Length: 323
Ligand code: PGA
Image: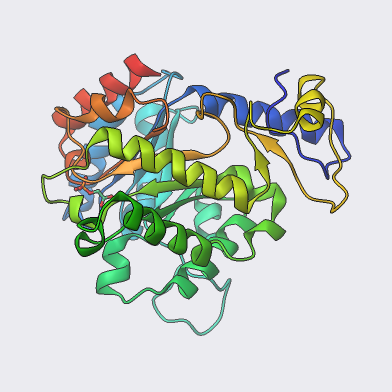
């Protein structure tokens, strides 16, 4: 058993092993998330698209594929999924949003429990389009993150700066993204078991749907920065910087209990490990490799290209090769 992903507060060896195993697979695989947004226009088209895209993936465990259709198609796609590709398909389903309450008088909303009940495993939260068109605030996003983690689903939290900030340079962009993460992830540290279910998608707003992606080198720098921010927020140490006592404990594969009762993880010297950071913004088959080949970038959140089966198929092939 590899020793990364050690949770100080876990008493059960079983949970510890399960936990470390989860991290281990995450460390090696690239994750592709298809964000269909408000597409396609009919259920038949949605089923067809799902089938075409899943065909590229069936029984290939090398990388992770998550498809996020609009809410209204989710339940039909769940049934369709088992009929066209079988129950044991490796394609996962995600939702594009969630509400923070479980039940009650909230017209039009969908809860995390409802999504889980349908077989959804991932939820995109805080997409810049929702921040813009639905006036979603960091406070609302924070509540959604907490509820979703608590329900046992995986969160894909979107963060990214607008153009006027990026024009000031990468340092300003980092400051903006750090601030977003700190606001959106408030009180998440109290959900220690859920930290491994947290994925961040770095999506510079100016790159989304514009055909002008970020520079892969700058994305890689931002992804590493985000991992460091998350590491500091959740008390995660990173080899070889980890202090010797912690490092020795990790190497012996032992649990470590810190005086303050906090949790410690390791996410590996290569920066690949513990937290998954994806890139999103005009990813296509022509540029996907330049992003996915970077060890700091664990995958991609793809909008426009994910509803074009041939184009998405090419991106999948790239992810297969690099995973
Ligand atoms: P895009 O969208 O790939 O069309 O730029 C990405 C996103 O909004 O997640």
